[in-house]
Length: 281
Length: 187
Image 1 (tube, rainbow over the protein chains, first blue to last red):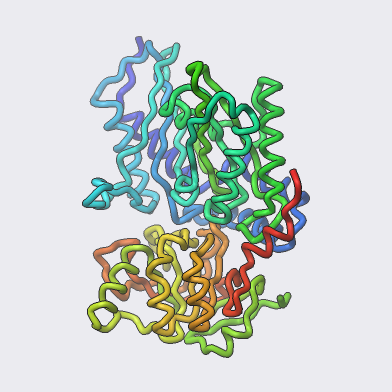
Image 2: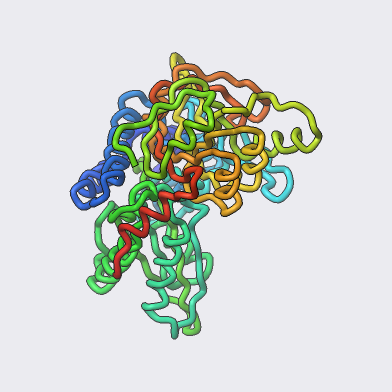
């Protein structure tokens, strides 16, 4: 057993949430740079250039990349031989988010009582925490600040098995078409297929943790990702939604076994500010 | 569509508005106001009661933004556009009061498009995801109404060379539709 004080978790989460909001991941920057030569629309290229300049300014000035510093999706892998001491793990994660909001001058964008009160919690908690027990004695954490502009355009469908791949691709393309310029294209797509209604939604968000442009290790699924990417980019929405050939920078699809009667599909749209940061204890 | 950006200096007259076409680049210099969902709701309540608004809308520019808090030494934190469609239902009554320019991102309702034409106003988009860059164009940010709304309070921004693109003009032009049709192809 390895003892880990949860205050270490708080420190790590705070650092990661700030880092994610100030520094665009290198793979995302590279994907934007590569898209410049593919984009045919002059306004589209201007938008991509603006986003690259924005990333430079944000990192230099420590000003958030986007004013929507997100609701915090936190993915934790906790080693089964780690012994957590000093308090609750979930509370330590929330304390890290609250500290980051305070120290990093991030926006408090979370309300409690969404049905009636809609009162701002003031410190951007609670985090949307997903914890997995894994082998080992360490803790790995990825923080993904998720903006509402893209989250609000995300969709889920319980398709019929008979709808097949064609139905699946059509649903993803329709989701992007309906979203238009709202989710701040060029976007990334996390697609979950299979599992149950809850599982498929989580898979679609976890697919966004994969590096930009990295294909699925299964060749058939990698081809499907590529087919979806082409279909989405044929829509013409373009950077900023002003028209163009680069609407989407990458599709990451994950699948999981499902019921014989089901074909669940979830599409989690991520904006151009595809922020995430990873660290471990 | 002109290559050279049009310079807009609020308050803005109808002649300037009618000279703008979807796809034009603009640079704004002067005072603009910020408002999101909550401030819009309050403004509409005030209009319905027949009371006076905390800001003069005639010729004004309204920017849909909820900035991050300013760190020491800065006028504002990150300040990019938020999704406009959330305030679609509140927009036509404000345009009827002389509001000339609204700035956000994403599509608008047919009612907003019609109101832009009826009242001689334009909808501009700033680049979503460029909040750090856009904040550099803001030299002064002060709360002018409803500080209790926090980031959703109405702020006055003093801006210089604030860049935006005309999406919906006062003649019915819509860059989102034009642009998408131009680059759409068969998959």
